Amino acid sequence: MPAVVVIGAQWGDEGKGKATDQLGALADYVVKFNGGNNAGHTVVLGSEKYALHLLPSGILSPGVTPVIGNGVVIDLEVLFSELDALTARGVDVSRLLVSSEAHLIAGYNRTIDKVTERFLGSRKIGTTGRGIGPTYADKISRTGVRVQDLFDENILRQKVEGALEQKNHLLIKVFNRRAITVDETVTELLAFAERLRPMVADTSLVLNRALDAGKTVVFEGGQATMLDVDHGTYPFVTSSSATAGGACTGSGVGPTRIDRVIGVIKAYTTRVGEGPFPTELLDDMGERLRQHGGEFGTTTGRPRRCGWYDAVVARYSGRVNGLTDLVLTKLDVLTGLPKIPVCVAYDVDGVRHDEMPTDQSDFHHAVPILEEYDGWTEDITACRTFEELPATAQAYILALEAMSGTRISAIGVGPDREATIMRHALVG
Image (cartoon, rainbow, N blue to C red):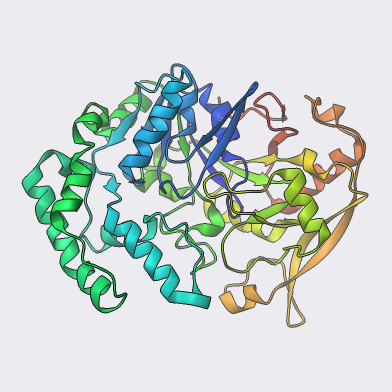
C-alpha cells in the first residue's frame, strides 16, 4: 500500500483539507509534516463544518491515526484548544501522536513575530503573528525548544535561558519592549507537559513500521508550493518546506518510500499576505470570486486575493514537487461566467516566459498572457462523473490538464466530501 503526499500547488487555501480528508478515509495514518497554526483547513462532513489549524485532517476519520511530525512547530495552547473543541463535538481525538522532535512555539516567539512585522512597515511579509517564523529561526539557529524538552525541567530551563539571553536584548534595545522572564516561559510550557506526554512518540519509527506492514500513510502539507521557503516567492513565503520534499524531512520517512505526490489546485488562484501575484484581479470579478468561493482565511479571516488560473505556476509546482496527480477544486465557483481566462505564460518587459522567471524582480513585473475558454451556466454540484459535466466545463478541465503537465485525477464541484468527481484512483 502507498505512501501519498498531498501538497498545495499554488499559494495555499486550495482545499487540501477536503482532499486529505477524502484520502484519510482510505488511510491508516495521516501526517502533518510542516507549518503550524498559521494555516487552516476547512472540512465539511454532511451538515458539520470543521476548521482545523494545527491538527491533521485525518483526525476526523474514524480508525485513522493522526500524526504531528517533527517538521511542525506546535503552539501547545492552540493544540489543546483544538482537541477540546473537537472532543466537545463528539470527535475521538485519542489516537493523536506527536513527534518528540517537533519544536514548540513559546510566548517570546509570538512577541518577536508581532513586533518585527510592525517594525518592517511597508516591507512587512504579511505573517499571521503566531510565532511560526521565529520558532523556525530558533530551530535553524539551534536555540529551539522541542517537545522532548518538556520532560526534563533542567534542560528546558537551560534552553529557554539561552534563547532569551539574545531575545531580551532585542526586545528592550530595539523594540522598546519589556524583557520576558525565564520563569514565565518555563511555567507556560510546563503547564501542558503531563497532558501531552501520552501522545508523544518516535513518530518516524511508527510511520516506517506502518509502511513495512503495508499500511497506507498520507502526508499532509501545510501552506503550499509558492510559499515554500526555498521554492516559493521569497521573501513572501512561510518558514518551512511546504513542497513534497518536506514530507520526508518533516516526518522521518525516506524519499524512496513515497509512491504518489498529489497537488491540490483551485480552478482559479488565490493568495493571502504580501507578495507578487500575476493574475490577481483588483476589480469586481476578483470580488465575485472571493464572495462565491468564500475566500476568507480559515485561521485569520483575512480576505484572500483572487485571480485566474495560472498554468505557469501549475507547471512549476509539477516540476518541483514531482507531481503524479492534480486534484482540481472549486470548479463550481466558476459557474455562470460566460468566459474564463487562463494565464498560459507571462510577459516581462516584452519577453514571453512560458516557465517561472528565475529572477524575483521579473516575476514581480510579470503580466499574464491570457487565453479565454467558454464558461457554463448549469449547476454542476450534483455531478459525480466527468461525463455529467457540461461540455464546456469538460473542455476547460482538459485544457488545464494539458497546459499544467499533470493529469487531473479528481475534480471538486462543491464543498462537501461527496461533491467530487474521480477520474483516476488516488490511492492503490
